[in-house]
Image 1 (cartoon, helix red, strand yellow):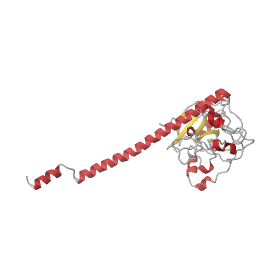
Image 2 (tube, rainbow, N blue to C red):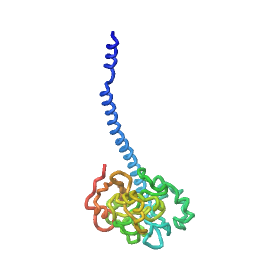
Image 3 (cartoon, rainbow, N blue to C red):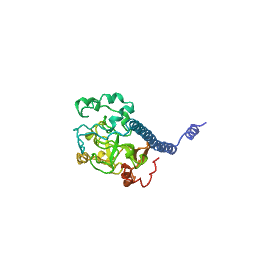
Image 4 (cartoon, rainbow, N blue to C red):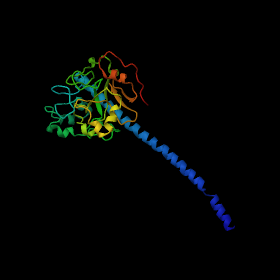
Length: 289
């Protein structure tokens, strides 16, 4: 057999340059399809873990209400409105739930006779509590909470006159929620800029939010330019926000945890935030997949 015939057979059994380029292109397309799919799967896993955290908060709230015949006070202070400053007593609704969340050791470490900002509480205030952190949240303080109690249906300072579940100095009983537990938002996700977050113990906007904003409107403020963060007043509270794509979780008083779209109607949100305005939500929004 001639040398030329051997060369022809050798190249005939292999890939041509065009075929090789086609294979490389196909591999590239497959990788391009696989990476977003893997990212989506990871986010779904994080979202599931976030939902689990809120379920645990729901169980703790239910246990607290059964034992105390009321829900925990949003925040405690000599008077209102509450400023987002490390001044005042400011023990919040989360502190009372600690024993119901298998965090009795943390609860016992708190000096309840002094402010949450007192040096005696400095060590416990700095504790990172994974059950209060959303797995999707990025660039947040270690000692933050990603879950906030709802104090009002509008952007208004935290005070005793609020119309949400978690108010200043006044506990809410189940019988007070005449709009119905399953129609009332108790807790939602929140984001805070590290520089303004006073920690999970603080009964300020660090652990309380309102429905005076669209879902995730607050994210644009927190994640935007730093000078935008400084433009709010000390009594500003803010709305709900998360790092989940497209929406965030809401915990209802009946124990339901739903993922709600950023496009959810503002009037519906307002109605869901009040405990006794006599208005049921206009439409029961469907849960996002």
